Each structure stands twice: as C-alpha cells, then as structure tokens.
Image 1 (cartoon, rainbow, N blue to C red):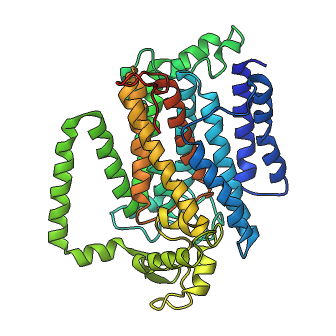
Image 2 (image 1 turned 120 degrees about the vertical axis):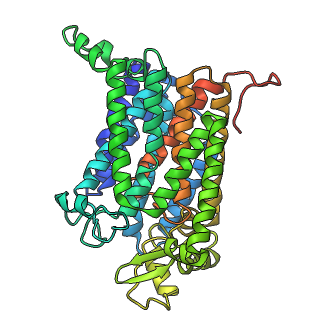
Image 3 (image 1 turned 135 degrees about the vertical axis):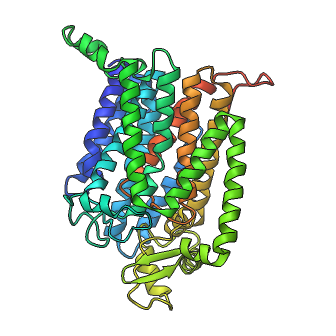
Length: 451
C-alpha cells in the first residue's frame, strides 16, 4: 500500500467512525476498533504505528489520566461518553499528523476543519435556544429562524447552548480568515495545492477538468470567504460574552502576529476597555460578565470557581471523574445563593475543568500541551519560507488563543462533541512544525526543535 493510499484510507476511517463516537451506541466499540486499523497498516508500511511529534509527551500523560478518571467516576456510563470523545480527538490528532506530510494535505485538513465549522454553524442556526440571548437587538433575526432540531441536549428547551456554540466557533473564525488571506496571496492557492490529496490524480480523465475548475484559486477564495461569513455570523448571533472577548483577543493577536502596526489596535482596545470600565463601573461590569444562568437561578462564576478549586483539593491525583462536576460538585458543595435547584454543568473555566476531571497531573499535561503548541507556532512562523504556511500557523494559533481566552470564563469540556476540532488544530500545528520547521537549521546551527 502506497503512502498516499494509506493516508486516504485513514481519513475515510476517521470520518466514518466520528458519528458513532460522538453519539455513542452499541456499535461504538466497533468504531473504536476501526480507529486502530490505520495504526496497524502504518506499522506494516512504515515499520512504526505513528510518527513522533513534539506534543507526544503531554498527550500521553493526558491519555493516561483518562481511564483513571473513568475508574474513579461514581457514574461510569456518563464518563464513558467523554472518554469516547477524547479517544476520537486523539485519533484525529495523529491522523492529521501522519497524513499531512505535504502542504496539499495540510490544506485538505484545513478544508475539513472549515467544513465542520460551517456544518456546525448551520445546525446551530436551527437548533439553538436563542430565547434568553437578546442583549443585541437581534430579536427579529431570532424570530425568523425556524427551530428544526429538538431534544438534542439537556439544556433549556433541548437545543444547543449559545455559549458552547460560540466557544466552538471562535476556534475556527481565525482559521477561516487565514485561509481567505492565503488564497489571496498564494500561487496557485491552497485548493490547488490540496488537489492531489483530494485524489484528483486517481479520478477518471473525463472529470479531471471539472475538478480542476472546482479547486481553482478563484473558487477557493469564494468558498473560504463564504465560510468565514457563515461562521462569524453565527458566532455573533450567539451573543456569548466569553466568545466575543475570545474572538476579539484572537483577532488582535492574529493582527499583531502578522504586522506590528496592529499594536496600535491593541493600544486602542486597552483605552476603550478602560473607558468602558470607568463609565459602567468595575463592580457592575464584572457582575454582568461573571453571572451564570443555571436552570431556574443565577449563579456567580466566583462561586463555581471556588467549588472547582475545592474539588481539585479534595481529589488532587485522580480528579472527580470525567463529566462529574455537576454531580459531585452539587452533592459536596451546594450553592447557598441558589439552593438545591442549581445545576451547573461545568466549572466555567477550561483549566479548572481539566483539573476537576483529570486531577492535577491531567491539568499539568494540558498546560504543557498548550505551551508546546505555542512554541511550535513560533518555530513555524520564524523558519517557514512559505507565506501561506505562516498565515495558516498564525490563524491556527489565533483560534487557539481565542478559545483559551473564552475558556477563562466558560468551558467546553474535554470529550465534548465539538472537542475533536481542538485536536485537529493541535494536529495541524504538529504537521506544520514537522513540514516547515523541524528540518530547518536554527541560528546556532542546531536542528530546529520546539521543545
């Protein structure tokens, strides 16, 4: 089996297994076994099951804590759902890292990432509970959106939570923006570069001209721009304050990374923020930002964070178990201001949530993964000779920055349904590092490394 054919088989297996692991059923075990097929095939073709990446050590430490978090969980069935999501995410990480051995394959995975964002945006349009999110004058827009999806979550009326939708989409807005800019500056463009990865050379000769037209530079620019508009538009509709803040910081970071002139925008942002705090008042502003609507009551984020810290202190080595924050937290530390009716699904902070789920070792591994990701971005941006690859690295980093800023006041738990997008972005950065920076000589003559 050739390298190209192995990559195509791995992508197909990942896409086929995804719905069965995101929505667990009796055949989810078969989907898990299916994920192991590319590893076996790669072992036979290359002599090793996977390539090595700079992120292997923190990922391994993180994965070691996952079965421990299921073992200590008082409700293993609830934790197993998150475990399947984490395993799927890790499979995507190594799938991207192993298949993206050329710039064409990297752009193929960017297309998958953006397509997932567009699909998520369209589902959110017709399946989100918009009722309580009317800070902006968008009531007319909400009123015209038909509700086509029902009982898909346990939140509110059974729809998607706007905050979670916003937190997932802020990951992808900078990536879509970087794809638009790369299609503009690169020659022949990301879509044309990805043509071999799409299997264009294996297509019948009759349809090759049609495919070549579809992946032209102009079509790539149009599709990327439309995708950016859709994803950004739905992100704005969520009216998630955490997502807005994360997106703002991510876009400013993207601009500063690309040009030092954007430091002016950063200064303007700081002045505007200071003026807002002065006008509104620090106490009122923090109260508005840190209030959480939970079921029938409002709970302050400080109360939630205090309970998350207490749970980490009580279970420092193992955590309380995947997806156990609402169960163990409510049982051990009920909310005095809200009574027994409060139901807070997570810690409303990414780092605290990881610490509660996986303990301090899992939190250290997660922070280490983010640090290595940032170092790899710096190496790619410094050493890559390709302008489009540097743009893409900046967009992926800005998306991760936006999501982590969002995660200061909200959270998407590890193993949640949108979580595999995070792993794809980690995999993209590992692939970019391997392709653009790992074999470049450093200034001191040593081989490039991000560790």
